[in-house]
Length: 219
Image (tube, rainbow, N blue to C red; front, side, top):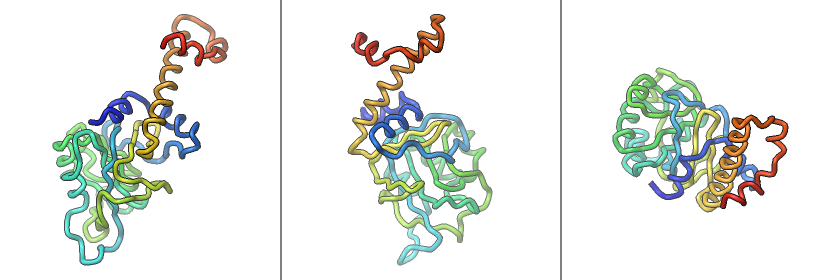
């Protein structure tokens, strides 16, 4: 896992979303809750693009398999399923393969299946909904490790992703250092606020303190 991915994993989606927002970048996406276990998913993105029609020359692999083989430990597989909720774009054998490869988790912009199997693996899958209907004859892989679009956002392989129960944040690779740095500051500020509340300070006073100044005294 890269140093940036390691730092990212220590954050939360709200802080990452606020950091993106502060830079004029799209904040976190909604509507992609955890379908299996509630675990943080964070790391570099390996993409999969699905579609309703076979690619030119026909489909040469089972959807998702190439991305799993290309992934490194700690990576996140992000699947463009075009918000489809009538059939699954991810399933149990894929979850097993990804888990064994050390993939951090999967985020699919659509439905997934074999949910209990992924829960048994303690493997996080985020998506639109759970469904039993197979992709066979309905969905085809258009490619992997290629640019995809999720929730109106363009995502490239190697970008960063953070997901928890609050949402899914996508971070362009060339802005990752900047976004993560701001999010770390936000987390530290919020930690100070909670600490002051636990000491008995009134919340109205806590919310009005100058945390930028307080953080400066800790550096």
